[in-house]
Length: 435
Image (tube, rainbow, N blue to C red; front, side):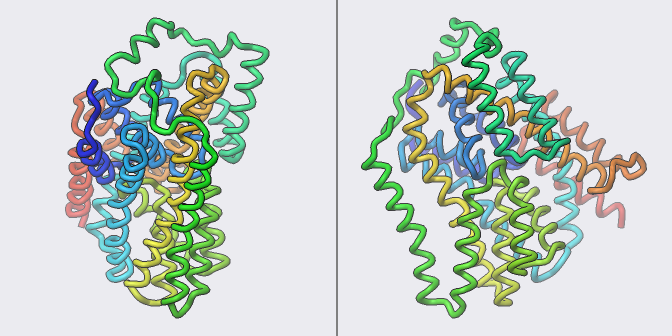
């Protein structure tokens, strides 16, 4: 397989930024379909190895996975291009939607289109869950880990980081005393054949592999300089530096505790931004979540909407609200690039370490259970409008559209982006005929 050009990769990362609907499960499925199945830029084992690492990091795993693969393809510039383009379209879309939101309020036909999108997004997540589950659940023990993770987060409200640590601990215990439970039915011959025909496979040597103290020190120093530049600029040119300082420090801190993605960190962000800083109201927080769910890009972009509302409400200015959104996005995602560019070269050396390899595979199994929880969480909101699971409150139209979407995407292989457009049009037609 010839090396894809940087221009080819740039085109895909740019397109991904506009089509990455469906949250992390849908985004990972899109990347897998294109990079592994269609273009064969990266093998299955390499893709899963990168995914396993990104799952244990704070921050949006899909964006970090794109950064990781971009780094493996074209080094630092590839990682930066993939990660930035994954976020940039959703940032500009949120600026537009946020401006409309605060200027014109609730526009029925816009939200009708979003309502049409939601059932199709649920279908995308369901199909992605099935696909990822088939790839990562390789034996009875991995099924047990996935089930335990689902029970832990759905019924017992165990925090996501604790579930990941539990999966790692059980994996280490099993590797030490019960190694047979970690064995899958996949043969070595099949694994070898899975590496053929891919540009990046488990035999590839990525750029800058291994730990080098001088390189890590240089990367941390550059990250610190980049972190300080906006803050110093705001100190010199803004009239209310205290606001910008609180905004920058808060979202920097949030970036380091976002284990499990947006839904894991949203309660913390909502509590502090609504109750402590009074940047926005509870209802505005819910509206921001709706906007975040129906735009491309990582769901953690909801934090960017919080930043936008903080700036707008504090200064009563669209321009300063937009600036606050950009500042929030910068401080939310800067650590993500640091995690990948420092950790990637180190974690690549571990792929042939059976202990780390097997333990990380159990992390992905645990995440299958967590994604199942997210699927039910989103499904409940779409099918019952956030109310209790009362059959009388069931939205029959949304249920029908979820089923139609699954059939269209799975059985008839309708293009995902085309179907998202059809779903938005469906929501608009439902609104027009209900007036």
